[in-house]
Image (cartoon, rainbow, N blue to C red; front, side):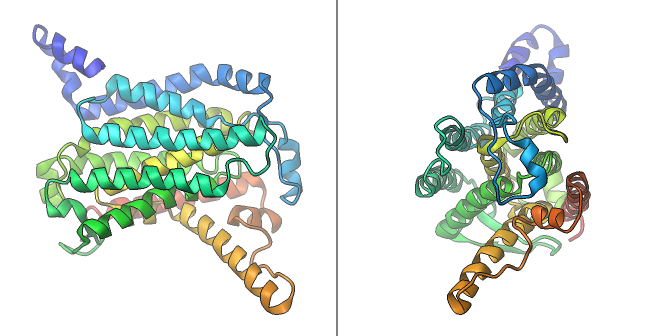
Length: 367
């Protein structure tokens, strides 16, 4: 919106041509989203509190979390508002990838919103039935996969890129690409959601990964840089920098209120949406494995739940009683049960994410 206005003014005043630079608009997007989050945060929190949209804490969870009962949840709506407004303001609205990630993000946000709403407003502990949640996640994931697959301009835009290995890519074909895309989007969405269990634990890694992918999107959408770095050139992918800058800014603004002790929780509305956004961007820029590396915290949290549940069911069937690998799943609760304070778990997971993000960025050059 503002880009189109700047381009119109640029016909008479050359200064406005500066807004054609993606890097400038990415920075402005981050700042805009941050300011929107900080300004709207108190109002959103008051509204959630007035509606008595408070978090219900599991009785079988860590006892230290019982004091969090009643803290406003569904704060992810604040993040989505900031991302949506900022992307529409600073993004190129003729770019197909901008609309793809925006629709997927808001679509998953709606699914998460309904799930949260049923849990906290209608007092339904199950929320949206798992089969329906998975159904709508699948519809959105497959829809995005089909659009990205059939809008690809070259075979390189549908190949699986292998990091750290020079000029090695695995052709997937249309069916393989759609399948991979589906699992990346749906899997990342649920992985972020599982990680969102401590104050600030999920949002800061999301911010760091989004910022790193903004750099990757920029070079992927730049023909010269893409050729130099031996990565696929995807025309238009650079515009995703604005969307990713908005995620980073909105996430930092949300962290202002979500830092320990949290004034508001993200809820499924934010976690599902942000995970889907990262997954969709990774597919567009052809860096799914890099997302797997950078999002290592999300991956290990998800695996911890899968292993815990699988082992419990297996031992219950074999021995008549369920046994556990971890003291509690997801993994962050296990560390709390071993004596780590909540803030220690969160900050240490942040440090791990910083290292993983740097490793992921190194794949651009180390080939």
